[in-house]
Amino acid sequence: MNYFGKFLLLLTLVFSFLLFSTLFGILVLVPFYGSGIINFLSSPDFSNPSTINALKVMQIINSVGGLLLPAVIYLWLCTLENAPPFRLANPVTSLSVLLSFILIIIAQPFIGWANELNSYLSLPEWLSYVEQWMKKAENQGELVTEAFLSTTSVRGLIVNIFMIAILPAFAEEFLFRGALTTLLKDWSKSTHFAVFLSSFIFAAIHMQFYGFLPRFLLGMSLGYLFIWSGSLWLPIAAHFANNFLSVIVEFLFRKGYMNTNAENFGMENAAWFTVVSMIGVAGILYYIHNITVRKEVKDHGPG
Image 1 (cartoon, rainbow, N blue to C red):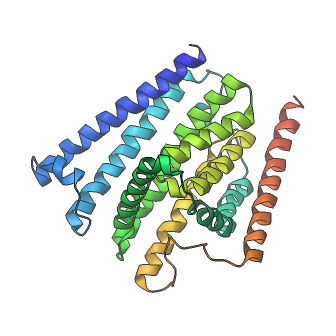
Image 2: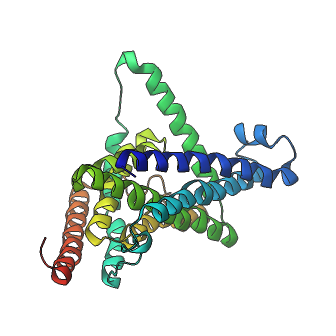
């Protein structure tokens, strides 16, 4: 199959399985919420715990059925027999995985700065309709995120860690790095183009445009971690760290142990702190690049 055929296959699998998983989720919820479940989900009452639980069920089903499953099927169909299965078999050191996790923690001031910079986005007057649509989509996304994170129970925390940190780390990395970035790299023969375009799509697909820049920069980091190591374990670790940190910070904030919630965490730092964060991120990425790429050259020879 040529590259265009593979791209169409990936799109077909994702959209088909997203539709199927949505219908399956509705069928799962009908016994608990009745035949009005569609209206219940389309106009959610975020103050109602039953609504939040239904949305969480849909989120989990769509993550598994609409993102992870089509990505796995695509990789199973399009990966050569002698290639590592699903890009998880490539050996990586525990140090590189740990550094990928630490990278996200150190990057928080930098991410906060990028988020603040993104908040100044303003479109020309003739695109005011588009800007209003973007703000509406952003507000809706914030409402859903806040509803998911609004828990103070240990059970709620465990569910959020699974739903927000673990599942997306695997599902989105399999899809955007394992499938899409690999496809774009093989087609364009350019690592930088593949990482850039897949990161752009990764940021845009979340439909939160006023968080586009930090998510795009995160996608770039995840893309290079994948390309350098040839394994999904590093971007999975970094992606998990990013989402896990948000879940934990919001939980501690709602429990009264922190003064900053997840949305404002990493924001409003001194300029020197942001610069130190940037330097730390660059240093860790450079070190990971050296220990992964040099190991590849050592094992297989240059070129």
